Amino acid sequence: MLNNLLSNAIKFTDDGAVAVRVITSTQPHGEFLQVEVTDTGPGIPPRQLERLFNAFEQLEASTARTHGGTGLGLNISRQLAKLMGGDLTVKSLAGDGTTFSLRLPHTRLEGAVEREDCEQPVAPSMDLRVLIVDDHEINRKAFSLMLRPFCGRIVTAKDGQAALELLSINEFDVVLMDMNMPVMGGVEAVKRLRGSNGMNRNTPVVALTASSAVDHVDQCRSAGMQAFVNKPVEAHQLFAAIEAVLGSINAEQDIDCPTCPGTGGSGGSSDR
Picture: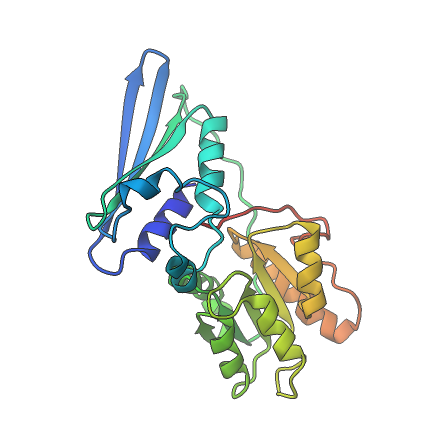
């Protein structure tokens, strides 16, 4: 939920700053943790605030064209907060920025808490040429940092159309393709790639998706994608998917990716 709020704040703030403030409070019905995310973006008119948490709705058509997104993230985040006994609220004025407040109950733990060993990522062992396609700059940077120690060349694109232009003049070993992007989404981009006669026509594509629904996965497969990683993405999942698609080229067999939807993996979601 916090990741979604921070991503939105940065995405909609062209100038100024984004601030995060954490507050704890004791109330008659328990202790609460409140995280406030404040931006200096364009703000939201009062008449539109009541529609902000509606599913599948963005406040203006221009927002969808410029920033992408389905309008689901805030709706789901608020539902999750309420299921946990808290809430997600917003204060904003047009032209004067926006503050989202995520309020959740918390319990203090007595004594030390032992931390289980985290699963360590298994990194690709090859010197790869990778194209990362995602409309969020933070995501592009995060994926680049994950792969930089193991890849010889990393190139990024902000939408499917820009990716196709790069694929027409550069050779890549694997493409990491976001699904929901402005200008041109991932499914359309991969369909055009597979239908072209370019050098990367058969380059394996790993879908970066916020949905593990069967129909969504089937749509990606039909477009020509070989593997899927759910957002938010973890390094070991990304490496497993890359190794799976590269291994399938040599083995000429169906991909068995333990982190991919439909092949035994678990799903997640992250989208506004």
